[in-house]
Length: 448
Image 1 (cartoon, rainbow, N blue to C red):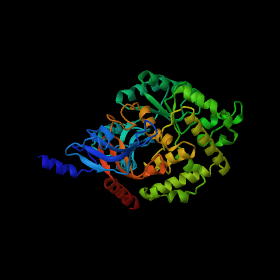
Image 2: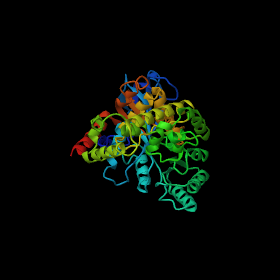
Image 3: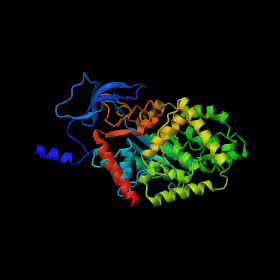
Image 4: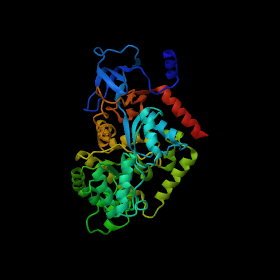
């Protein structure tokens, strides 16, 4: 029976294995500080890091599977804080899961939930499906789904009782309904993330201590001087139409208000740069990751981009100023002590799951963060935001074994995060051959 079980496990790459897994002679990037621990041995057993120390001092358990990792770098798995997981049973679900997994994403905070994702979350946690851990939002709370304040409180109670991890705000809510959601969520200790409804405004959202604001929503409008007509005008795409009258001298005040409110930020810069940046649509679609995207989806994304760029008020100069303001905001918020979360809005326009998180990291570095600071947004910060900082986000004995093995040091060059030799989620190891097999299947399906 033991031989039969061992044979069966060999046929299930990446799924739960009974033996310990050891990374031998690996350089560890622990992420609790900016350093590399050279030539370590890391022992993983039962989904956790059982031991970590200099290779000469850590014993390798009998029967362990040994990953020879000399010259490689082991870092915590990355989180995608603004993911859109397809409904359970959707034809694209396994594709999205595999794309996240193959690019080192070991946690996804899904920001648009449905009942089937509660089951999906359990399947992923148990290793019944390969993929990242899932934290799922409840169905959208917006101007159409919430009738009045009493209904708002009722929905929050229902979603809490059903076991959703967080709540997601979308546009269309007025102040009474927004306040009812935040008040009830605070009483139930639920995380509330999302957009800032236009009628609510950034100042009120911060005063209500919204947990996390997505897309830096309403920040550009908040930079418009008080009394200026643009302050109450239609903001356009996340404030694009107000970029030219925004006053960057107001940024420090916004930073301090955000820090005092304890709000996290998930900027999703790759979405903004892809849609509004100077690259042509053809150049975007020529990127390597679009080999995993079917032609019909590429066409839809291209059309959405052209529609936005042909909308009234769009100019290349205004878009450039908008993106410049966002870079300034991102750097100032980070330096001012506001927690930034790695989130790219995938899969969404031009954001291929998994790959787009690495583009987001690169944009953070372009905005002035160091590679270490950028990496913290997808490791320590996401774990802390999701109230799992005592179990994930760093590498140490006793922590959950959510890990990415790299061929080069990510602290030297943020692009090295894409040089993935293998990924581990809760102790389940996926080597390069397994990841390549998953990606090859997706590539073939997209081509067909």
